Image 1: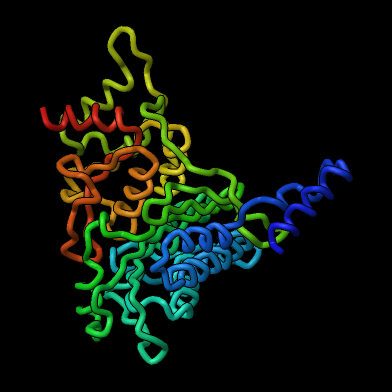
Image 2: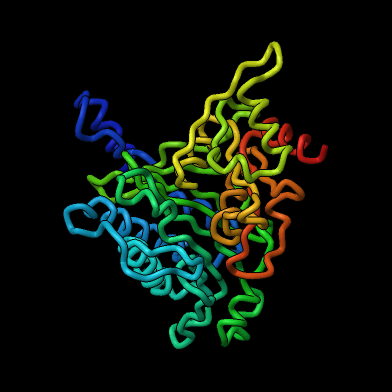
Length: 358
């Protein structure tokens, strides 16, 4: 019946020769995509499908708040600091609450970890004994909020072996401290000129969806994203260059002043990881945020920034490293652990790793 309906709609467009108004009515929505992926796994219970439905609702709520931030006076500081010691913006707090409420309401998560929360969150077991854990940065790039620059939400989903044993925040933290290779799903939403949601489920590749506000659905616009093997863009906070190690400094100089026969790279840096990684995924090149003299272990958080982005990058054919090991192989020792990050096109990442190894 569904196939027949889609065929009829397609025929309607062809007969009417419509130039506008009905574009996209036959496109694959995120909900349909997730259901199709579920059918590929006979052992699937549908729990991940329901969880991802709640995630996309949370992203739609946050997107609405971001769009109305100026009108609704949501810009500015909330007056508190998060566990990282960073000043919280009003939208940080709203996004965190929206994500927690919507995800927990799915009744499919037993553990949540947020950038904005000091401890891991144990979900209400009176609702159900769920088998998934989720870590998220509810609003990445929040320093850009007031300037109306692209910001986003990042999330990673893991399966918990023994959910019934999770009773305290410490239990919850221990349950989710898994390497990125154990992730079952990762993704991000980017709130910019359009709202994109990029997702990867197990071995299903990397798919990019765009929110169609006319129907309130994410529709597939970037199927099977594959990053080029080499790019022409490097993305980093070059203002920190003086504090980096010499191999990373030399690498930047090589990109700007290449040897004969190679072209110089263009520099692009937005300051929102979501936006910088999104561009890198589509255009190729490299994004990096190395350790430095001030942040000796790195700046980006492993569970809800580095690992999910590495999962997407690797599944798109790219590479992601701390400079010493692949990000997906790092076993977290704390929920807010930080790591250095080098990710992007395989050949570009190989270049910087060769210099780091001397």
